[in-house]
Image 1: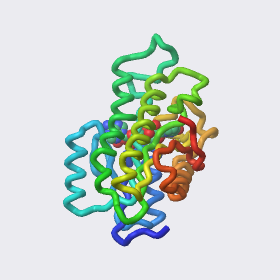
Image 2: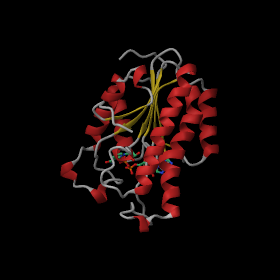
Image 3: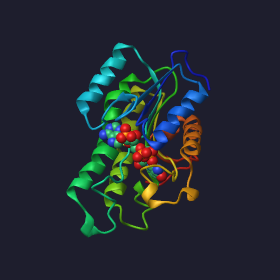
Image 4: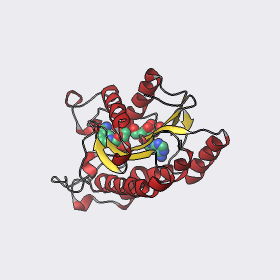
Amino acid sequence: MNIADDSTAIIIGSGGGIGKALKQELFKENYYRKIICFSKTNDIQLDITDENAIMKVTNELKRKNIKINLLINAVGYLHDKNFFPEKKISEISNDYLINSFKLNSIGHALIIKYFNSLFSEKEKSFLVCLSARVGSISDNYLGGWYGYRASKAALNQIVRSASIELKRKKPNLVLASVHPGTVYTKLSKPFIKESKCFSTNESAKKILKTIYKLTKEDSGKFIDYQGKVIPY
Ligand SMILES: NC(=O)c1ccc[n+]([C@@H]2O[C@H](COP(=O)([O-])OP(=O)(O)OC[C@H]3O[C@@H](n4cnc5c(N)ncnc54)[C@H](OP(=O)(O)O)[C@@H]3O)[C@@H](O)[C@H]2O)c1
């Protein structure tokens, strides 16, 4: 890949299963001069639900004249000690829906809001949000998982709208929602068998390979780890 000498890659959510593997893979690739990692608990601390903190971080990057070539937001939420994804309508909870939208949709929207101005204007650059196939409305034949499905569908719509608006200002920027495959992590563990899914390293390699093949025409699309378009 041809990229500038001052090239920068950013991972947000670098403490998570896929985020950490993406960070390791980027260091292995050695394409970027700077790799900056944000996490709620490791690396540079950033809570993506805190708009003020995001603004401060991006002001600091601006002050340092950082130009981003790649940003992957690997933050996501499916369950915690209080909540599990809903199996039926009666399990819908105000608090779980709020958590899902805060982390899977609004936090990603805030990252796009504050980081988009930092992207390189000259070279092709990528802003990728990790989404999930279950966020596809037309592919929903099983039902359930109201909060996760709806918050990922909202994320895909946010990416789509931002891609249309930014086409004029940043014609070399490609935005995409990417489904990383079924990957064995803290997020997926309660629902899958390790033998039936990708390791975090396999997923990270596939995600990066897919991103580097994206063209300007792909901006706004929802795609899987193989580069195949997923219908919204
Ligand atoms: N695993 C799968 O099979 C699968 C399938 C489809 C889509 N995805 C998507 O892929 C992405 C990565 O998932 P994963 O499997 O790697 O999950 P994970 O291991 O649970 O990682 C989730 C990440 O989100 C971070 N996070 C949570 N709250 C945050 C906050 N307020 N601010 C900043 N970061 C926060 C966590 O940070 P800390 O560790 O610092 O708390 C962690 O790094 C998610 O968007 C997920 O929906 C995963």
